[in-house]
Image (cartoon, rainbow, N blue to C red; front, side):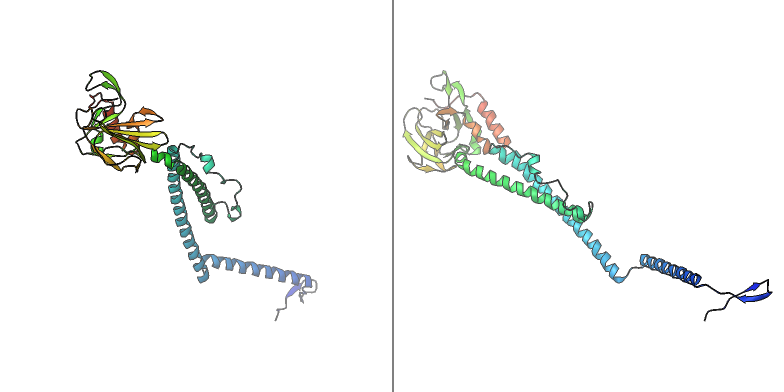
Length: 323
């Protein structure tokens, strides 16, 4: 029940009843309602900020877990990108160099990346946007790398025959490879005692030391002479390469026989015009004799090859004649 309000009227010297207008009543009601709603909103906001409901606590925990998972995924993506970078460097610096083809430029490897940010609607710096962008980057570079490997594979297949026919396998074991008694070039003939071109390399080794085929091919001819090269043979490798093995003791193969790289073809001897057991080894490329040592680089370590190269360059007395 509303209380009745009065005021003192000095004109009549009496208390008179206060009559409230409808508009004032409505205004007061509106002010009361607005104040009440504002106070209620402030109280709700206060309690929401200071207290967490079980559902909110569950969602916050899930959010933290998702952040942790995103960070783990990003680290794995970055690790994968590091591995991919190493593969790209090996691709450019080793495989493409060996196959004599141009490396892929950084601009080509970055092809398809950049431009419009398709994850802008997720927020520029959000974890999900950063993660998806890195996944796209990794996928794009992997696609380019796969195409590169496909190209390298095709190039390698086309050059398998050339590699197989290149005389890179040393004709004697590493133990005897550095025992070079006569280098490729001018030297003093052991019998005639005159300066003469020595068009091969002599490897000093005991009799019966194994001799190996330097590359795939077939035996073009086998000869057994009492003079000159003594027991010797020529292997045809293809692509312009031939190898000649002389002063052998035993020949274990026959003419027209197919050979594989590294297969034993005979043993070191002292046949023909020879002053001590050794192998006289020659390499022909397009009908011209070339220095055999330059082809050993593919089978030896850098230190081993350097030791053989230095020994091959040393001026020594040849143990065989050259015809």
